[in-house]
Length: 149
Length: 149
DNA sequence: ATCAATTAAATTGTGTACAATTCAATTGTA
DNA sequence: TACAATTGAATTGTACACAATTTAATTGAT
Image 1 (spheres, each protein chain N blue to C red):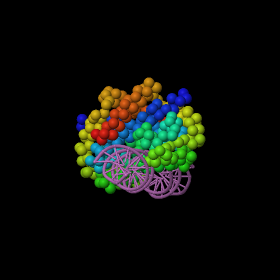
Image 2 (cartoon, rainbow over the protein chains, first blue to last red):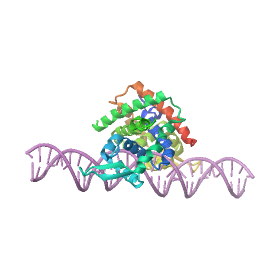
Image 3 (tube, rainbow over the protein chains, first blue to last red):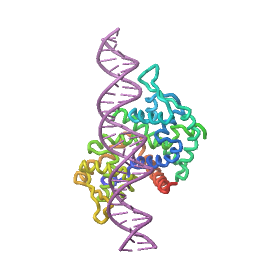
Image 4 (cartoon, each protein chain N blue to C red):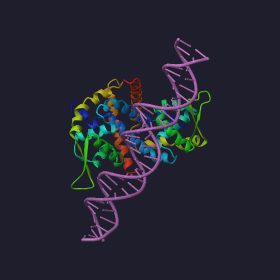
């Protein structure tokens, strides 16, 4: 409880933090070919599944708020990947739509997931288990953060 | 291989990315009491283990470079948590040392790891397994990123 | 119908991240 | 011993994150 509890290597959170950054770093050269960043890639993943959603919906899928999304979506619009327009029914909402360029990028991106974990020393079953545990924790943490507990 | 491969929920990387941010968000109120951020907390964790190391060494423990560390360490010095001074033997190196305030913060921080996973719905064994898998992946990814493969 | 709450984005300000470059100190080698 | 190569930090420029605030549109209760 005293000393080893406070050691870096013991911290699950550090493992998450560092692994996420190394993973993102590994994505970078692949995504550079598409002229996007990793968070922008996540936005595209959502839009490829469901085009024409609001900033709010996008945020709830990605656990991001408008403070992060607004400037990011503007950059993506500047790069002609998406379009942003106010909803006609509710002027508060901004609807995000894929451009033709944004739609086409899907084919180029199809190979990315496979290329990513290439050469990474980890069993598929172990990775699957990892993902399930993470998603469970994510849900649990998000609920706690929501209710401000 | 076509459509489901590219879905958000399937992406281990998204699970990492989102869980890390929710975890950091959960740390925030606890660390605010110490007037530090999560990355700054990691710096302190390293220094509490081994005081008086260089920026380089700190970076290799945390997988961060001087571009991130230099401004962060300056802020921590401004807040009187650490001191930065050029090494006498090798003027290129900057040695980072804990101040009395920085040392004292260790006691206040002792309770943090326990408080953190409180209320998080996850078995200790599962979390332990998660950490091991992550650290293995981290090492593997870092080597690949290092050699620019 | 009116006006106080609520909601959706945008904005502001601070703090990471990181690639790429610069600069000064040190090392290795001809 | 010069001096090119290397090394450790700092700097520059871009892109997230996110708390807190602001603004405009919509709802809901009276």
